[in-house]
Amino acid sequence: MASASATGKLSREEFRRQKDLDAARKAGTAPAALDEEGKAINPHIPQYIAQVPWYLDTGKPTLSHQRMPDYDRSADKLDNWYDRGAKAGPAAKKYRKGACENCGAMTHKRQDCLERPRKKGAKFTNRDIAPDEVIQDVASGYDAKRDRWNGYDPAEHKRVYDEYAAVDAARQKLREEEIDKRTTTDLAAVRKVAKAGKEKAEGKDDDFGSSEDEDEDQDKYAESADAVGQKLDTKTRITVRNLRIREDTAKYLINLDPSSAYYDPKTRSMRENPNKGVPPEESKFAGENFLRSSGEAPEVQKLQLFAWNAAARGNDVHVNALPTQGQLLHLQYVKKKEELKDTTKVSILAKYGGEEYLQKAPKELLQGQTEEYVEYSRTGQVIKGKERAKTRSKYPEDVYVNNHTAVWGSWYDVATGIWGYACCHSSIHMSYCTGEAGIEAAHASSAQQLLESAPPSSSMPPPPVPSSSVDERKKKAEELFSKKRLGEGDLSLDHDKLSKALSEERKRKARGDDDDDRGGKKPKGGLGKSYEVSEEELEAYRMNRRMTEDPMANYVDTEA
Image 1: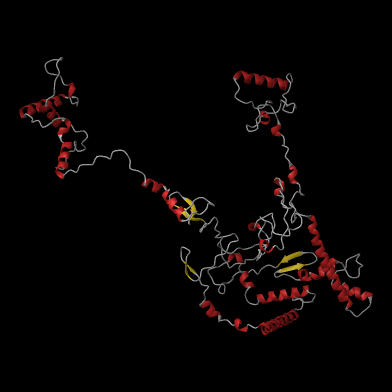
Image 2 (image 1 turned 45 degrees about the vertical axis):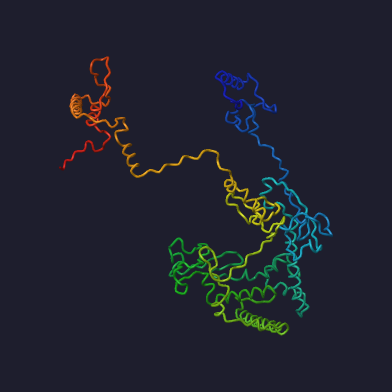
């Protein structure tokens, strides 16, 4: 069905006409429907494609909901970004009102200043006033906000090239100086010395070698040194790892608990201790971190670091090739470093003095008795020790305005739940302080005070309840629960009439006429006369009636 969804519900006749029109359009006997742009809509398009969603429906046939909307992508350009560090003209000569108190710029306040806080701000010194920044409003689109390279200046990458060029130039100069120190003047010998220890490539006829050869010469330790547990071929870049001895227990089999130390299968390393409950000295394997920091491992690391630093400074030191030489040079370096440290310390003390301040108590005494010990309670209060000083905020504190002697929020009204000033009990922010008069006025205008000072009500007070004695209360209770409530009064009953009424009531019960309605009894003296129930008959009925509401009425004691 090529037509769009119609607004409202179609009647049966309109639906039939719509179906006939669609069939005619598909057959070609009726013109195709046109959209809002005047384009014909193919009648063979299925209804689920041509039907417009309810939130885009305009009541007219259209296919615009199937087309991609035209968005404004002007904000997605890469060059549309903030101009970092741009300044709006030269700096001012004097401090301007409303500017930053720290640097003097008009584009921000002191709380937002990114400059280092000065001891005395530009507001008081009128010196070194910073220029105003350029405030830009960059409206970036969806893609521009999520582009990690947006705003990046490709010209900044030139610094990397300049750095590498400077390193190459320094290496070239160092190589030339090394060659100049040679006594020979033969050009062939000079070339041989320049290319010593480097691989000769085809087409290289320069006298001093290229930067690539220099990189290979400087990184010879990383290329030629074999790592522990590996056999590395520097030419083919193939690494063959040595297999462990089969008799050794694998690291991942020491503790089978999944929550124990992590085992890296790629490097076959387990850095943490798999058995945390066992001391490292007693465990079979305490982790590689323990092995790296135990024994002579730290000394070997220091020796290797010394060799790398010495090689970076131009000295030919290699720990693996000449271990004895590296060890001796390291010992000499440490000895000279200590002597230089002692010499510097002695010269400073001789010049400025203060040697008595370097003498401190023993470490055991300092750790045993110190004022830095602080003990806290469960609620966070300090029980013992000195509490840490609170960090001061960069924002202004304890600033009193409008003659107030307390800050806003120092007083809370429990009745109304409003904050205010403690000096005048004013709940209006930035109001003028009225002192004790304001406190009295606030107390007088409170709801509780107004209720207490209200005049007494004009309605009559309730009558007083008369006090009754115990006998009167008992008498009243007897009257409430006696037969007088039923209108019987204090009449005396005739025993003969009562016995006669009891016999008649038993006969009536025996006949089966057991209903509580006394009006159903036949009146004496005929149908036209009324019959009045006597007091004896009413008492006989009460004595013989069945108490259905009594739960013990049908109880029979079978054990007696």
